[in-house]
Length: 268
Ligand code: NI
Image (cartoon, rainbow, N blue to C red; front, side, top):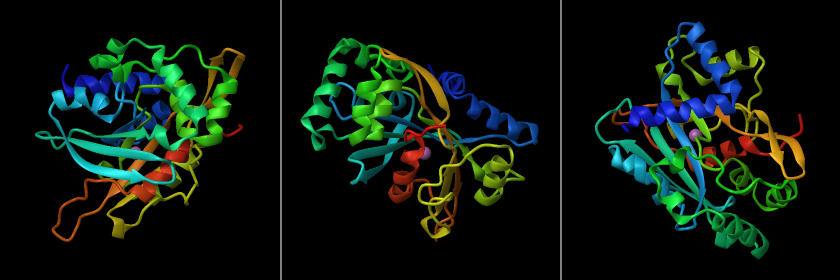
């Protein structure tokens, strides 16, 4: 496996799971644009069997190195980002983990019980990042209970290990080369943007501006029946040069904090 194969495999699952992302990608290619991927993101729990280091392993084997760390105090998340050491065109990888110890015993018990259902060797496999949900069929009642404390935990309980989002690099677009132009284009095509913290997160002074769609609603088969819940979203990132003339390559925690909310539960 090389890194291109990893991204290809993740992309196929991602557009299957989130048809809107595939449609938006096609909007750009139909408009003559070449879509480059700024980054992808994964979510996990900080349990040592499946924490950031475990998910990062397959990327590190394929030439990636750690480049930054981020703390999301309110959401009780920690994250690292990775970049390919040789290929500047390779997308960044952003991996966050939920700090379980910050939550109630009830949440920790639910999560530990789910994690314990899966054999340890499954977590050690290089295929972990492609495996989706490994936990037994989810319960809507448990999903709703997790949401009371953490939308992130609820999402992860249902969707598991897969790209939570891909990100269109605004810098690589010719016509839609600012986040404003891109947002108008996406909205005119009928897609809804995440408006938490405003449509555009970050400023030119931060060196990174981002927006994202609201996650697609998908039908999930819970033990109680089929319910529609938000799955994954598509993100857009515009990067700016720093004082030394280098494009900023990291992430802005205060912006990412709002973007996490793209998967919050909402009724259609
Ligand atoms: Ni992102």
